[in-house]
Length: 364
Image 1 (cartoon, rainbow, N blue to C red):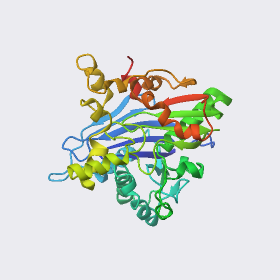
Image 2: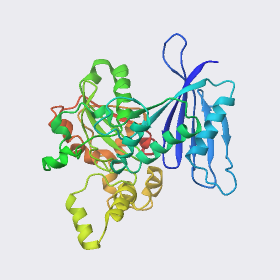
Image 3: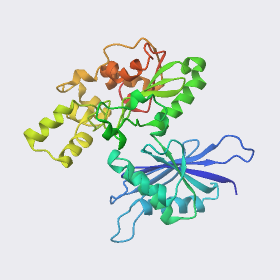
Image 4: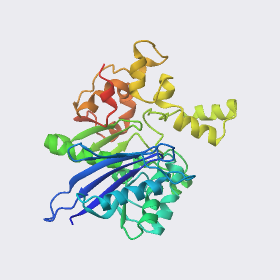
């Protein structure tokens, strides 16, 4: 039986997965199937998978035992059983995980051990929306099939080589020494698109490039020679561009005001910054661009002008359907978002690239 790799991106209520066949001759991996387990923790979980041509190969609603919650462990158990019992799929010999935060220690993929998993747990306060669920997927695989090797790939790793100045906050050294600095995120996405741009554009992509990752989470990254030199995200994944429900960068005085005037505590501020702000807060309608677009003609929300693109940058735009996303919500903060790249000597930019599906919903 051919051998394969399982790649997981575990979230709070969903698990995205892909299975790749290992080539016998040492060539490139080939996609065999991909899928989604969603509504984890709810009463109506769903398990869907597609082959490499996009044809549905399984679409079921798993039924957990009476009185039990369908959690990550149950979902991944069902996934591994399905992979094992499907004669047309390869034998999975290892699992790769997207892990959002690798701290200052991990700049390369890591074979996971109990010690490394424990260390990754300490980064949960830096990425509370993602890290716990990434670790839940790791622990679930370990519980279901403990002999299966697992490897973590980190979103922070791509930004490891940034200049020291780009990584610092203007705070006393004591905080820097305990790890309060800019890390940057979405690194796996940026690493991919850096390679894709080089293939598509040749030497142009090795110059001064700005890439936007646009979705429910959003950021921009300035690159030189395919390497990160600055990013809009910093200490946590809430800084930078406004996102689906995350505020993006704020004047710190706003937080002091909310604490003093409205009596907000840490929990209140966390909920506000991570779950009630961003596109949802700006539009008052939805954190999904489709919902905002559906209301655009009938209702002009306060601040809706922020969702327009006033002009294009003096650089080449690349990036399929997602390239239109600049018209939907990023370019209004273009100068500020790219300021790190300008300070790093990248302005004017040679290429501005966009990735992910937000812009497909914004064609006007």
